[in-house]
Image (cartoon, rainbow over all chains, first blue to last red; front, side, top):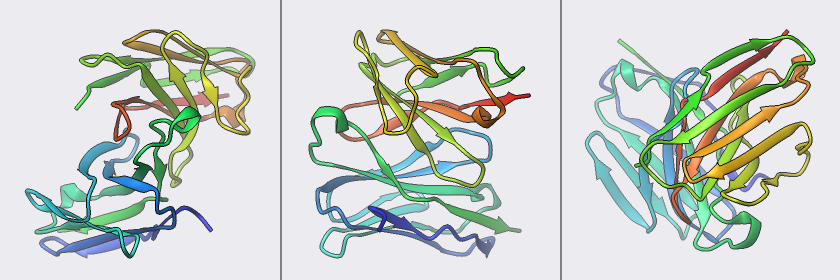
Amino acid sequence: QKEVEQDPGPLSVPEGAIVSLNCTYSNSAFQYFMWYRQYSRKGPELLMYTYSSGNKEDGRFTAQVDKSSKYISLFIRDSQPSDSATYLCAMNPWWAGGTSYGKLTFGQGTILTVHP
Amino acid sequence: GAVVSQHPSRVICKSGTSVKIECRSLDFQATTMFWYRQFPKQSLMLMATSNEGSKATYEQGVEKDKFLINHASLTLSTLTVTSAHPEDSSFYICSVGSGTDTQYFGPGTRLTVL
């Protein structure tokens, strides 16, 4: 079983739809949670960063963390064709120490297409 | 967040040659940088953790003699793919670690070995 599970999709939605992207994890030590957006042939871009259970909103994006269920989500409201990309969840422990310091564990990535 | 650049963005080389990829942290002093490779439609695979002034830590299965990493300053890390072969063709991405929490990624380098 992978430490982080993410549905690879692909996910196709019409413009204006609400998109829900999800990851589950098994390591209860994970405390920091991130969502990255990656356009084709580009490096990942940090979208959202959270470290506690609950919701965090930034414009059309809302990140949700439920540590009791080991489940995180990213919601995109009023989706646009420019949101078409691969979305990666990532996480790391409160303190890993040693050779694991700062390492991120990634989900597989979900390919999202928003069509006009 | 940190701004990270990579050079070159794309490189094509012949089998057997060595290729050097540079990763620069433009506005952040990075004691730790990470090197990843990514195959089409797959997630990022961590290759190694690069610490300024010390030897890199390689992930299991990554040949350290083939993928040479040098992190000589707080703003520059280099990855050299030695004696490259077609199976080394991939998308190589570096990132800057900002502590225990997040990483900021470069734009990536596409390596094609003929």
